[in-house]
Image 1: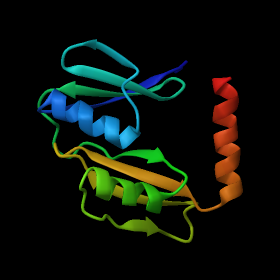
Image 2: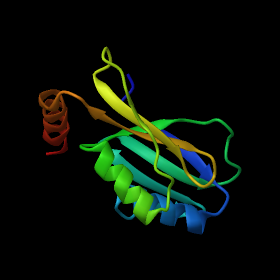
Image 3: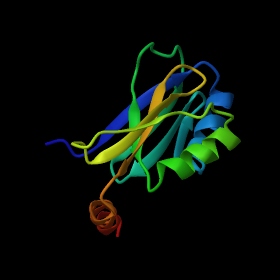
Image 4: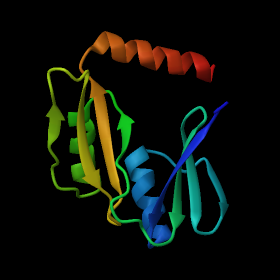
Length: 131
C-alpha cells in the first residue's frame, strides 16, 4: 500500500533554492532536518523536497494544482522575475496547464481545472482529509 509520496528537486545553492521555493509556495518549509535540505508538505502525505546537489537535467515537470494559473503566473513573474510563460489547454483535457523552470533547470508547472465544480470537489476532499 502506498500511503505517502515525496518528490525531490536539486539546487546548486541551498540558500537561493530555499528562498526561491519559499516564494513559489508562499511559505516557509515544514521541515528542515539538516543543512542542504528542506521539505514542504503540499497536501497531507505529499512532500516536496529541495536538496542541495547537482540538478538532474530534464527532470519534471512537477505540476501543482492552483485556483488560477493567470494569478499565480503574474505573481511569479513579479516576485521571482520569471518570464511570462504560456498556458496550454485542449478541449478533451479537463485542465489547463503551464510549465516553467526554476533557476537550476528543474521543470515546475501549474494546472487548473476548467470545470470549477470539479475543482471545488477536489479541494473539498483534500480539506476533509486535513481535518
